Image (cartoon, rainbow, N blue to C red; front, side, top):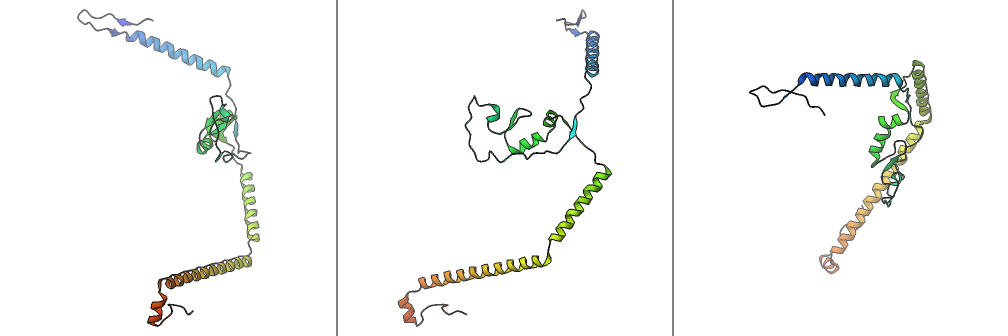
Length: 200
């Protein structure tokens, strides 16, 4: 390896770098890198990837919940703890990071898709608006005012009966406690049998 130094001056004992020589070497290296990049671009045309599409399958995040699994050194990567991505051949430890991964750039590239989405045309937008309006109209037809009033009345009746039962339970408990606390002999001496025995 050649190290380029300038010859030190007679009174100076320090070595000085030969800057001109290093500038030449840097220029040669940059030219070589640029030449390699151009050759690579000429050899390989840019890869045309598909536009991003919605998933046609449901992501399974719940199947492993609450299950225990024995993992050894010989266990394959797909059987280890966490979520396994067979496209990228990697294991992700939790569901949030797994969703981030399958929605991410690296995973989409491995699937052969770019992160660009197809632009909708005016006709597609109009069709979508029409379908949404039809859905709204169908919901309005299904919504029956009289049925809704009946449901509300039934709900009110249920609430009232529940409150009555609660109130009656509280009264029974209160009477039971009062009767337990009063000594019967003392009550007879004082001239009464109990508190709150009559219903209002």
